[in-house]
Amino acid sequence: MTYYDQDPNSHNLVPRPAGPEDRTWAMLAHLSAIIAWVVSAGWISFVGPFLVWFLKKDNPYVRQAAAQSFNFNLGMWAMSLIGWILTITLIFAPIGIPLIVLSFILTLWHHIKATISASNNRLHHYPYQIKILS
Image (cartoon, rainbow, N blue to C red; front, side):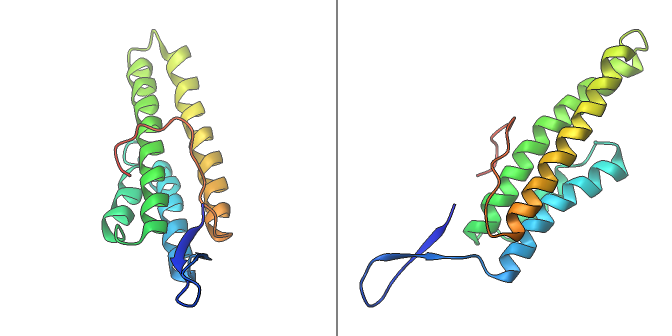
């Protein structure tokens, strides 16, 4: 998605690419989720994107990137939580462990793709979002 500014000469909308700082913040929103997932085994992966969203919510590019990352991580957090609950019961560990692994693989895959997209001044649209932030 490209953001637009008003051209003062023609009064037409012209594409405005995100600046280097905007791209850095958007990349941080995506990478912070991977780091938090690894450090906390999936328990707090949504905190980093939420902090980026909170700090930069006045910037439309960063806000949208962080909101999508947060919303996606909420879904992956729910999947991981269900996996951990099933694993703790031991009887359902054959279902819970693959669910946790799948959650990690999806998180890693989509956040790497999103980080590359952010570095190229594009927004990544995550699947499996629980839309809380926008």
